[in-house]
Image (cartoon, rainbow, N blue to C red; front, side, top):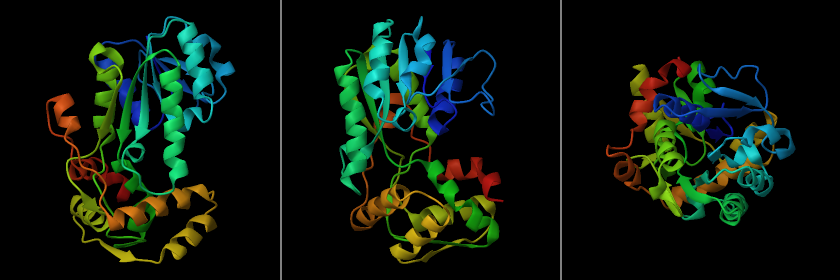
Length: 279
């Protein structure tokens, strides 16, 4: 049995499906059963990973856990101690490329490092998936694209190699179920470096429209995000990393290809798959 924290999130949901497709038993952890919409065959567990005492029953018969830091907050050490105590043997952490390739405010990378350290100290066999930004982060542009053909933001020249969530999940399945990924930290990226302007153009191509990116001052973007009610750390995280990636592009690796035996999925593939969200 494999436990997936953050099971209703972008990576968690994909991992659940791929594990089921491969014939594995899965426990999906979510704070609420409402709207979880898990596939048939999944054992749904309602609980809060950031409050490990709510998950006492989840570990019985569990062999491995996918740990998503945003789901567990500061409770990684306590949660993994409970998993190990009940016989779990392996943990896979969805971490960030900024641990190895610093960008943005250091406190955000330090949060991922703290979860990695908790995994190392847990006694479980560990694997870290240090991911670049997700293709799915571009869904934040959907309201602007619904309203017109211009996406407004800061640092249009900021370049990363964004990754499809299905690739992260496919690597996670390998690390959760096979012994040859022990004590490995993989930097996972998409196949090509793209600026924000590139991504907007590619989304437009998927929609059959001509979209453009309009540069705004970072202060304008921050003010707009705060006016939407977002907490301070959201623009801090976004704008800090974009400023650095505008000066130097984020990493591009071929790790996905090496691990999966096929090329990483392109942003263009993701854009076509998700065109409906922008229409």
